[in-house]
Image (cartoon, rainbow, N blue to C red; front, side, top):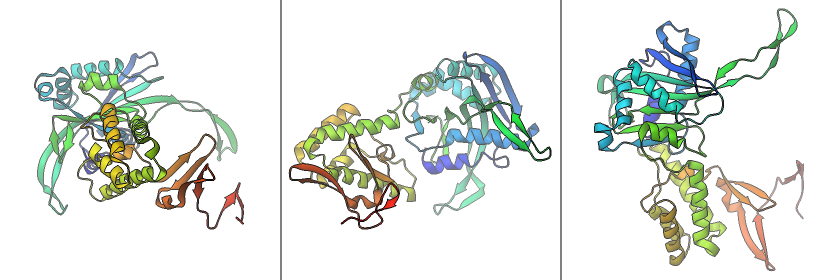
Length: 375
C-alpha cells in the first residue's frame, strides 16, 4: 500500500466517516491470560469514548511505509488453502461476529506477542464504499469503484499512570489523583486485506510495528506465515557496514554525502508523487558510487557485499537508510551534526600528516552559549 492509500483509510477513523458498528477485544494480564472480553456497540457509546477508541485504532495505520508499515504478501496456495488466510477471511466475512474465529485470533496473539505487562487486543471491521476518482484526482462520491471490507487489529499496552497532585479551584485545596490503568498507543497491529490501487487485494495485508528496531517475527509468522524484511533500524546499520567495508579507503566524506544527497532527493521527489512505494536497488547505489568517483573494483566489492547481506534483488527504502534532516559526523570524542542542506560546510583534510574535520564558520559562532570570535 502506498502513502495515499494508507492516508485514505486513516481518514475514516472519525465518528462520522466510518461504518464500524462495534469494537471487539480482550484484556490480557501480565501472565498472558485473558481476564475480560468486550464487544462494544459504537452506536451506544458516548462520543468522547468513541473518538478515543477510533484514535487508538488509527495509530495502527501511522508511521512511515517500509519502516512502521510493512506490506505482507500471500502466495496463491495460502489464499486458496492456507489456514492463516482462512482465519483472516473468516474474521472479515463475518464482520467479527464469528466467535470461534475471534477466539482463534486471540490465541495466536497470546502465543506470539512479547510485551511486558498487560495489554489489550482491539478489533474493528469497516466497510468502505470507495468513491471514484478521475485521472485529475477529482472525487465522485456517487460512482463507487469497489466496496472495501476489512478488519483492523491493534495490540495496545495497558500502563499504570503516575501519581499526581491536582488543585481543585472550587475547594481551594490540593488532592492526590489516584493512579489508574490506561490504554496506550498500539505496539503492533495489522490491516487485512490490503487496499492496493484503491481496491481490495486479498493477496496482501499491512503489518504495523511501533518499534523500528525489531519485528515481532513470531506474531507475523503465526498470523500470516510470511517473511518480513529486516527491521528498519537494522537495515541502516547493515547498509552502513556494507558501504564502509566494501569501499574501504575510498569511503570518503564526499562519497557518503553523495549517497545521502541522492537518497534525500529521491525522498523529496516522492513526496510530490506517492503513487508507488519508494525503493532503491543495488544498481541505483552502484550508479551513485560511480558518479561520486568510486573505482570499478570498489563498486564491484560493494555489489558482492550487498548480495551477501540483503540479496541480489533486494529493494530498500531510502527512508530507512538516511536521516534527511541532518548529516552526522562522529569520532570517539566528538559528535558534529550539520543540517543536510548545508553539507557544503563540512570538509575533511590532512594537514601536516594529521587528519582534521573542518567546518566553515563565517559568523554566529557560540561556545557554551557565548558568542566568540575566530581570529
